[in-house]
Image 1 (tube, rainbow, N blue to C red):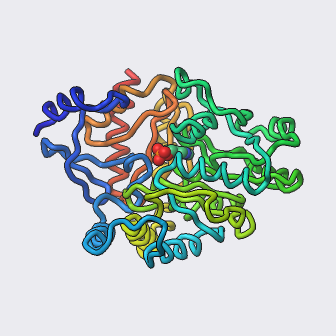
Image 2 (image 1 turned 90 degrees about the vertical axis):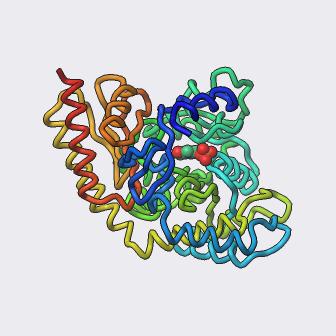
Length: 392
Ligand SMILES: *Cc1c(COP(=O)(O)O)cnc(C)c1O
């Protein structure tokens, strides 16, 4: 099928929930993808921070194939070696002690909220304006952007929204009923917004003083994206609970909740579950993918290439007034433009680079962590041409 035929069938048979680009992808390798017409692209989105080890990594593909031939699903009524091995590897690579496995980011966030409520015996969660936590009903209620919520009320109660970066606002919102503060260490969908200096550290201290839990939504920032395995390590602030998904299993759908022994121990048999959660196939993919991050030194590569990429974006900012700000850490980068950047995404694609536009004005770069310096140079050169076009 060609692109047009695929788009026609999508229109006929698939609920039209997505504003898709007119592009049908067929295969990928590392940081490159090919469409069904045979055109190639440098992928600076990585399936939205999912394909951290690159597309079709042979180690991940092999692990999935081998596991699929042996055992795909068991339910959690039984043990599997794959689940305990991946739990150990994930916990050992993190500042946390215990894992629970689920299947998506929204599910991980909801599980984190349930765990915080079970541990504290309280209901209220303080969340941030401009945040994004997923599309299921409770994750949607936690999300701090009206555009995602419109038309889907009534929203789940129990969330108090405050401005991101404002510690005083959190202080004022804490009550007898507060269980936790839920925050993205770096706001992703909100436009790659970094925490103000000292904010997360002070927040952790405040939570300690008030006896409430700190939850990081690391669904986008986790698995090496910011240059450490987790953003909590990049900012040197360890939350009580972390929600993970996106990059956790090399593109295979999976989510997880990580917590300290004390907090994670609040979940007792029967408290929480997911039929597919931590199945042998997902865990085999997760283990292979995490081992690639470690074996290929992708954390230090992300730091080096992320700084290089960011410095190149900053050079472009000097040349083009339409760039208002360059933001980000590791390979989670964004440039805020003085105009809506939706059309620039098309211009970039026509020049062989996939990016997206988030929060209307932020052109976002989330490449696979395996991206090479030469590929970054190609991206910068395409971006230079596009910025020139929009500056005329
Ligand atoms: C993508 C994302 C989610 C939702 O993940 P899904 O797998 O789409 O449910 C939640 N939180 C953050 C920070 C995200 O970036």
